[in-house]
Amino acid sequence: MSVSLAAAGPSTAPLLAALADPQLRLVDAAAMDYFLIEAVQTLRHSSAIADARAKKIEDEMIEAGLIPPPLPPQVKAKKDAQRDSIGAGSSAPSDDEDEGLRARLEAIGLHVGANITERLTHGRAGFADTLDIIKFVCKDLWSTCWDKQVDNLRTNHRGVYVLQDNSFKPITRISSWEGRADATRRARVYVALPAGIIRGSLIRLGLNGTVTPEINLPQCTFQIKIPKST
Image (cartoon, rainbow, N blue to C red; front, side, top):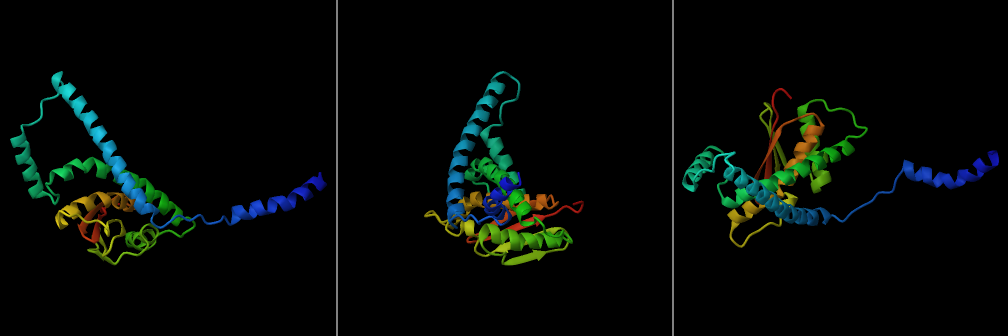
């Protein structure tokens, strides 16, 4: 028995060394950009199918008398205008059509951000306070996902943090022949996934807040609001 163990020793040594110090596996820096482009197109198609299915079910329920019919177009348009005057969102019809797409991208970002944060904080000492967590997002998470740190961080010390990236990588190449306004509208889709990544990272670290992106191409600002109870 001792002879067989001795014979197996040298062959298992490289395997143990590989487990202790695994070889790095790298991917092309542009892979994430290509992935996001394809993800947006795929999820836009999937979202359209899901919306059509929901609309069909709604029509069947209206015909069966289970729910009331929708409001006339004039009344609905008036209510939408009132809501837009109160909020900060755009009233462009295409924004409403992309709402489901942005929700799906943000949901994916939640999982990505949480998993990346768990990997980055493995073996790391705990954070002192909320500001320390935000600094982690500005430095470690930003460098891992977008190859740089945040350009500017502001806070009112009452739970609101503003993270500004003067040249945010996912939207630096977005343009439109229809003008800057249309390019900004298109860019809103591509910041949904990053917003989800940021929020997922915060949730993994114990902060359940909201993340709102604001675009001024190529600049992007993320406003983070943390409730006092968190």
